Image 1 (cartoon, rainbow, N blue to C red):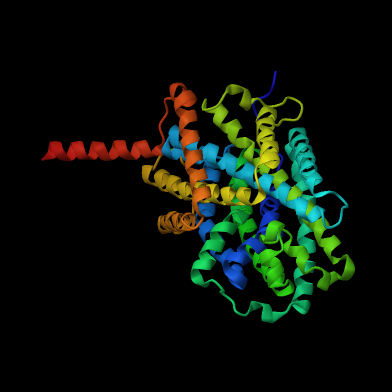
Image 2: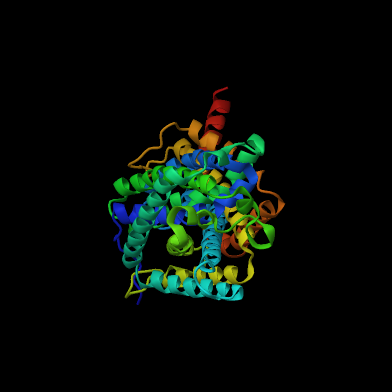
Length: 457
């Protein structure tokens, strides 16, 4: 019979590396050129703006993770704060967004693979599918093993990025930054919306909180530490890409004249000579694979947590006796990953992933406000987010502002996920749960106050 408990096997370093690994892929190796097409050299500011908008949900999640160090992350917090209907919608949305991002990483690495492996373009998708299958097997084999491999890969990639930016400081052409904001402030905001998904990994580790040692200490440090480190890395690397690469190549160097999918390799020859493109391409393939691994590791915990709460079938909560991992949940996540790689265009994956993340991150801020307002005795976090409630209100408003810049398809996709989550709740979950969220306590208390006030009059 399968066990029902996960092992706390991840320390601070492994936890932080999982978070960074989830951010160090497409945000650096694929998205800068897409952002450059929207904002010009001011794409550097777009990454700063995206980090500012990510900070409120990161702080909110860090607090809630120490109060509820269990698998589920985003789903768990929204469910307990706003009730099972909103929890189902958020859980399905967060799960899809992370799987979209992992698929985007694996499809995107194909463009780099073409630069140093003599493969037909049509074979790249099969390579991505093979890597996805390998990642699924790795995640089933154990969280500790996956975490250790992740830590090694991310450490090596960070060293490579440091070398890239230090050399770029000498070789970069500063005239590439003039004019700076080629599409004005509106272009910076639009680019920030598109690159927002780069930071999505910062809170992924909350979904594996049940497998983190000393979560009250390690989770906030890993979430906020990885956000700070990755913001600096993004600024440095994106600035290096702008300074090294020809702007026309960044804007039109991709398939069919679209934005380049290999921006780090576009100017690599000027840094490392003839082997520059190969070196950067190999690093990109490793980093993007690492990011996809982190995505599967964390996103597979959403179905696990929802199954435990009777919002999805009970088979998804089974923990493998041998490997101590949620095998069925990983297999479900992996199956969706394979389908996305096979059938969805890479650019649409990026847009949809960003739109879903912006939506879910906005709701996370509302969840913290609900917990604080309800003042539930059981809610006792070891870390409290500073600046409450102003930081959370800013996060909601800023997230809504970015979402309006995403265009029709991503917004329609986000609405479809909301309707899909609602349908799953109504068809399966509603008849199986009778709990309410913290927000219901707020409503009940205020209704009671109104009654008492009326009696007093």
